[in-house]
Image 1 (cartoon, rainbow, N blue to C red):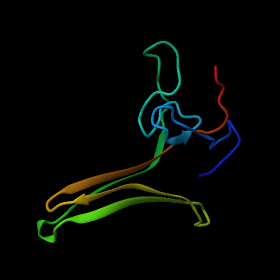
Image 2 (cartoon, rainbow, N blue to C red; image 1 turned 60 degrees about the horizontal axis):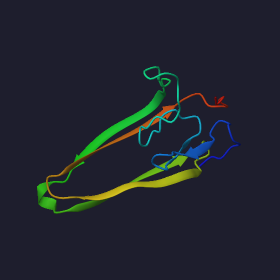
Image 3 (cartoon, rainbow, N blue to C red; image 1 turned 90 degrees about the vertical axis):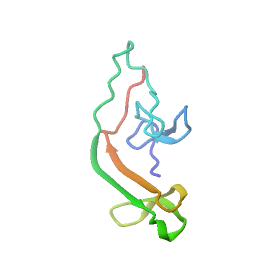
Length: 118
């Protein structure tokens, strides 16, 4: 994980709802979708539009004749030099014959930097 000074681009904090590490600038937690900031009277909350430069969806099915299979979903982030900067085990599980799993990976980007808190 990249660490920066408080309030700078890439600064992180823990979501008060789910305790996941999220960007300090987030208005909505990307893990649990809870609102994190008060943005005026009810109904005035409109999160900024995020740029989604990457979205990959896929699924696979366990053929009935193969018995149970186990899977591990691992996410790795590398910098421009190919150095690993984060690696997380996202989930594990088992699929019995005929079962299917679908996966979606998306990267959302927002302008970073200091925010003013009121």
